[in-house]
Structures are given as C-alpha cells and as structure tokens.
Amino acid sequence: MSPSSVVTPARSKRTGDAPKPSRPKASRPGAAGPARRRRTDGRRWAPLGFLTPFGTLFAITFVAPICYALYESLYKLRRSGLGLAPPSEVFAGLSNYTDALADHAFTASIVRVVLIGLVQVPLMLVLALVLALLLDARRTPAKRFFRLAFFLPYAIPGVIGGLMWSFLYQPDVSPIADALGRIGLHVDFTSDGMLPWSVGNMLTWGWTGYNMIVIHSALKAIPGEYTEAAELDGCTGWRLAWHIKIPMVRPALVMTTVFSIIGMAQLYNEPVIMKAVAPNLPGDWTPIMAAQNEVAANNYHAAATRSVILALVIFALSFGFMRFVNKRGGAQ
Image 1: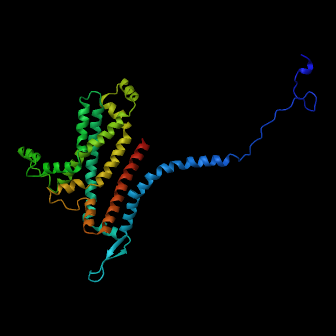
Image 2 (image 1 turned 30 degrees about the horizontal axis):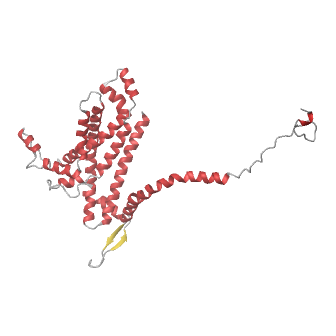
Image 3 (image 1 turned 180 degrees about the vertical axis):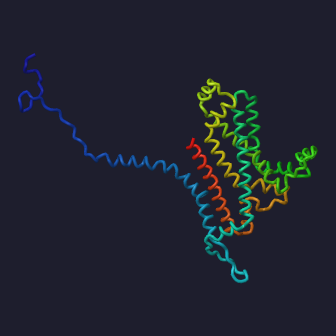
C-alpha cells in the first residue's frame, strides 16, 4: 500500500492540530418549560377531579341541609290581625334559640340523654372490649360461633329489636318481671325511674356486637412480634391484654367512643317504640323527639333551632372527648 492511498484525517489550518468535535447546539433555557408546566399542572389538578363527585354529594347531602337549618332557625312565622291571613316569615335573630333554651322540657331532654350516655356508653364499650379480647385469645373455644352470636343483635333491625324488648318490658306479659316477682322483686321496667335503664339496656344489647367487631379487627391488626416478645418475657393472659393489646387498640376505642356519643345524642327509635308499652313516656323525651313534635305542629323554624342546638351539643361532646384523649395521650 502506497502512502498516498492512506486516508488521513483532515487537518486544520494549524499543522498537526486535529479538528475539534462539534458541540450540539444548546437548547434555549425555556424551550421545554411550558410543556413541563402543563404536565405538572395536570398532575396537580388530577386529584381534584377524582374528589369532585364525593365533594358534590357531600355538599348536597350534608353541607346544604346544615346551612338551610341555620337559615330557618333565624326566622319565625308571625300572624297579624285575627290570624285569618296567611302568616308572614320575619327575621327573628336568636330569639328562637332563647325560646328553645327556655323550654324546660327540651333542656331536660338534653340532660336526660347526656346522663344516660355517661352510664351506657362506658358500660357498652367495656363489655365490647372484654368480648373482643376473649375472641382474640388463643384458648377460646368455638370462636366462630361466639363471634356470630355476639354480632347477631346488631344484625337484627332496630325496630324489630325494640318491639322484642317492649314485649319483655311490658308488665302484664314480661317473663323477666314474672321471674323477678317469683323471688320477691317487683320491678316495673316502664316506670319513670326505670325507663332510662330500660332504654340503655336496649342500646347496649343492640350495639355491643358492632363495637366488638371494630375492636376485634384492631386486635387482629396487632403484629404478632409484639405478643410473642411479651409472652417470652412472661407476660400472658390478662397482663398481656392490659399492657400490650389494649394500648395498641386505643385508636379503635377512641373511634367507637365518638361514634357512641353521636349515636346516643341522636336517640330516637328505642323510646318511640317504648311508648307503646309506656304511655307515661313523654313525646319530648329526647331532643330529636322534641324537634319531631315541632315538625308535626308545622313549626319548622323551631324544629330547625332545636336541631342546630342538638348538633352543637354533639360537636361539644365529641370535640371535648377528643381534646381530653389527646391531652392524656400527650401527658403520657
């Protein structure tokens, strides 16, 4: 091969200098900016698109009725002359609230429900916790049967359960009253003094199984390493439940307590059904029954006022309990 046939790289003007590789042209700093911003904005607004259906239904079924009730509570009907003309709706300010709070029957219904809840809610949750711990224990026999048996009262419709207990409470045909009478105890479950206990028993019977299932699910979520380590250290039985299991299901206990407080404040079905066997039970025995009486009398503004007051009571009780629990948790 002759030297002339060898292909040599091109030389630059300076002898012996190889050509420098060409650099790609740098793009402008803001060339990809708009496209990137469009993708970022799309990702930012995507969750709102998924939340829109829920937000719409929540606003229609929850927020709008509350706002309408607040609006109705600020007005009242005024009749002029002999009352033959249609009443006119006038702005009343807070007078409906002062009238409701001055109503002794309505305030007594709130106090009555709060007192029932102070006894019934802790008793029900303690019973639900004990049942859940028994089902979570290793040596408990027939767990599936007892789980179904404890939950069955909640599966029965509340109206049917109320009718059943009304039959058991009725003085003339009650087998419970008859059995107690045979040993010298004459108890009337429909008397004024026994009505709160009778209604509280109906609530405990119907809702203990539901709370037990919630607490039992929380117990099943406890990692097995914690219980195994405690058992290796000699912590078994009720000591294991007290020091390991109960502290770890604290969120479930708080949730069931808040739900029970809200449910107690909304007490309605059980006392209404009890009126069939307890004529002495007044029609405004609970706050919701008092509001229902105003609806039956076509006094919707007073009913809305009582509903708003009840909502404020529920909020105060629930928020107060949550603050108390958080403060105790922070102190520990």
